[in-house]
Length: 60
Image (cartoon, rainbow, N blue to C red; front, side):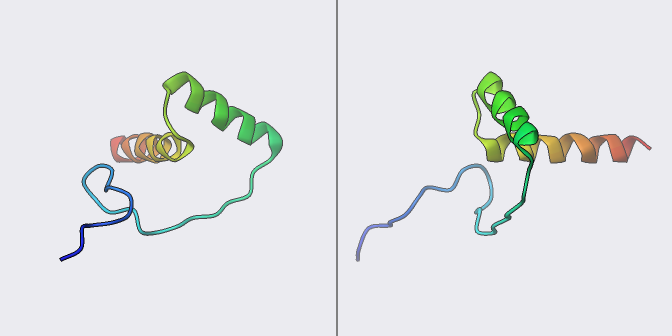
């Protein structure tokens, strides 16, 4: 049997979906600044933002 190949799963679920979006230079700079200050990837920052919005909506 051959060994498993590919990237290891990060977190609890497999990241097999893709999202592409367009941003202005200012928006991208903000995203990069947040990622740098949090020492996280852009993807992690976007996911954190989604979680924050979801929490805010659940409060209402």
